[in-house]
Amino acid sequence: MGVIYVMVPAALLFAVAAVAAFIWAARSGQFDDADTPPVRILHDDDPSP
Image (cartoon, rainbow, N blue to C red; front, side):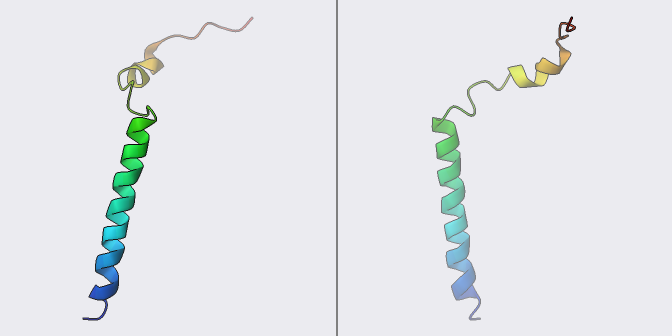
């Protein structure tokens, strides 16, 4: 039963860290262009001379 006193705060700390990481990523522009990367592989690169 004593382990619950460690695991609940650890889980809450992990959840807060995950939300903070998501907010930081959203504000820094990580999710701005979600359409280009999947189709980038379809574009042919020009051969180097």
